Length: 59
Image (cartoon, rainbow, N blue to C red):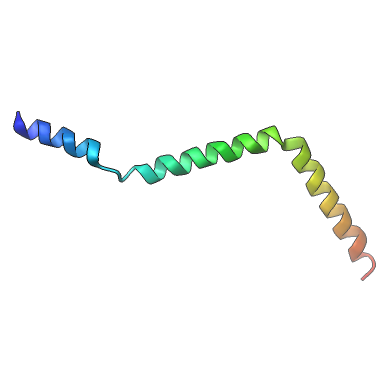
């Protein structure tokens, strides 16, 4: 019974998966922000590409 108790304590002390969980949470937040600001980001990217196109014609 003591071995089982020590094994369970070891599982709860193990922090090897913490980095994976943090990365997943960061990705979820970033995807949420992209979905919320999708129209603004699309307008910004289109504006940047149109400026690049117009200014590259002058070169």
